[in-house]
Each structure stands twice: as C-alpha cells, then as structure tokens.
Length: 220
Image (tube, rainbow, N blue to C red):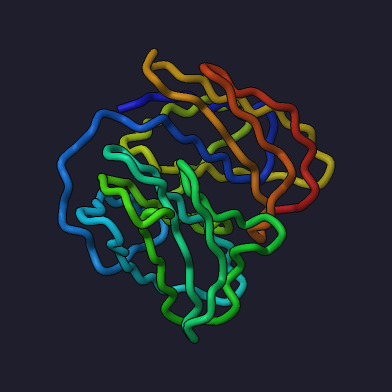
C-alpha cells in the first residue's frame, strides 16, 4: 500500500488523481466480465495473443479514462474502447496504457454498453495487469475536500486513480500539492478536470512531491 497526502489551498472544483508505480507482484485472478466506474481489477494474459474483454455501461457525453498497468511478465499493455455499435472509440498502448479524455479523444457518443479490449500490443507476451476505469465528471467514490484541508489516501493497486472533488469559480488561483508519505516507489501525479469532465489544463508529477499553481476556468 502506498500512502499520499493531498493539500488544496483554495476553494475550487476539480478532480485530482494520484497514481503509484506498480506494487509487488500478486497472483493472477479470474477476470470479471464487466467493469464499473471507479473500479480497479487484477487480471492476467496467460497465453500469447490472448485478448481480455470487459464491458461497462456509459452515457453520451461522459469522458472516461481507462488505464492498464502490467504488474508482472514481459508485455506491452494495450487497451481499446469500442462503442455500442462496434466502432472504435479510442485506444492506447504503452506502460501504462492510458486513454486520454483530452480533446474529446475518449468522450462517449451514445448511451449503452461499451467494450474494453485488453491485450499485449505485440501479441507475444504474457503477464499480470491492473485495469482501472474512471469517469472524469462526477467521479464514482470521490472524496470531498475543502479549502485548506489536507486529505490522506492510499493507492493499493498499480492502475488505481483516486478522485477528489471541491468547489470553485473562474479565475480562482489554487495550489495543489500531493506528497508521498510512505517512502516507497510512489510517484505522486495529479490532473484537474472541470465540472463537465473536460481537462482544466493543470497537471504535475514528482518523485516525492507534486506541486502546481493552477488557474480555474469554470464554476462548479
């Protein structure tokens, strides 16, 4: 378990998300058939060329992040999200493989059941991985944080994002600080999103401390 503290030094609305480097390897588990917003799962690619399939229920206009991190083995994570009609919505590969909601790259186009495919980019490797799904507007299981408050949290799985929400207005100037308090292989990182889920243009990371001055552009 990696521990972090998050400090917001003004009253704004945003989402701050933190992530960790992969923790110690764990044993593979049976992969579920579906995934919910805010959920992180632990699965595996057990044979070269294997593709794991997941579904989730989405609503038109939602902006989503899907994040896949390998926790063992030798493979390059790849994720693709398909629309209810079968058309490709967005994709990413790398370590981690992470779809981006910036520029509407992963903005859902209709209500319905979406499909995530997770596999090895080269179709030759195997190993364990974590997969996380996040909605950037009204995130599930978000922690409310207020002006001047310091919140403590932990990232328990490699692909996990933790969401924090707070209230603000255009031109509010904020300082966001995320600090690793565990002393482990944890690199704090945050991004800020507007009430409608669009990217607010504020992002930073650090080896122990991530700190950034940000100017907001929306009310909420």
